[in-house]
Image 1 (tube, helix red, strand yellow):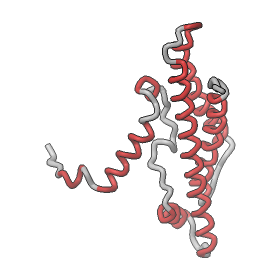
Image 2 (cartoon, rainbow, N blue to C red; image 1 turned 180 degrees about the vertical axis):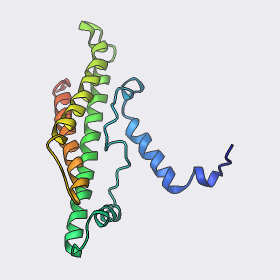
Image 3 (cartoon, helix red, strand yellow; image 1 turned 135 degrees about the vertical axis):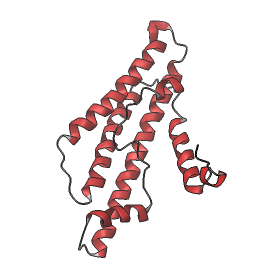
Length: 169
């Protein structure tokens, strides 16, 4: 058995990653978090620091001027942040829907929330698969386009889920 030190377990980078994962999962109840499909591109840590985006740009470009690389890195970071924002909005909407119908046995609404949640995740997954079937990004677009696709799919699904929330006056 390999011996692991406390320093390895609680390193700052690992701690930040663990906290980020917990915060992403926390808004969704246990029964609904298991319904989320593994959407390629969502399971990776969201690299939104400019230095991380620049490293990605440098990895796939050659001979670009600094201004072009800065612009590309900024665009990638913005796409990643927008993707994360819309995903959080979607997860928040599902969480609100679950709370809203908790205990509402009339017409089986309480039972339908789990099915509706799975359907919402399937809509996101199908949207991503549909849109990515029409994309073939090159260079820095391999980092930007998937985030733009996911952002639009999460936004569409969030709007759909939000349309089913009861608005109180």
